[in-house]
Amino acid sequence: MTNHRKWLVLPAMLCLSLTGCIAVKNGNVQTDSGLSEAERMAREDNIPVRGETPGRTCTTKNLSGYVGKLATSELGSAIIRDANAASLRWIRPNDAVTMDYRSDRINVKLDNAIITTGFSCG
Image 1 (tube, rainbow, N blue to C red):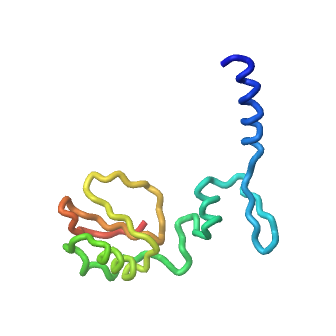
Image 2: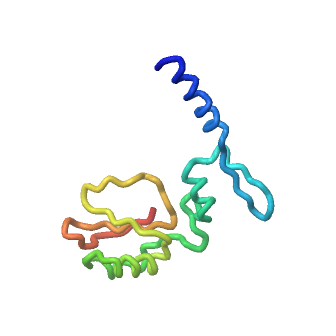
Image 3: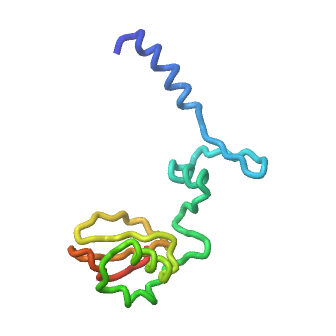
């Protein structure tokens, strides 16, 4: 990079490094420095961050009747309701899934024909 290009890039980099996000709650300014991008987005959208939605803790107790059913959006809605979950994750054979644990998420295990075979929370 030539010297004159460096002088154009440096001020831009300095400006970007000094920018930060703030949130105002009840008239008080809260800085977002030190928060991850997901935490900043969650704060802006008022979404819980650490895998917990108040009042929602997944349970698989009432889901045995859904084993063997074709995966549809209607089935997913019923499973979320009966599992007391906030979100659902369909998992097919050989799918890569994250290892993050969310106490408010129901995992629905499927076979290759998109038929439910089991459930787990997380």
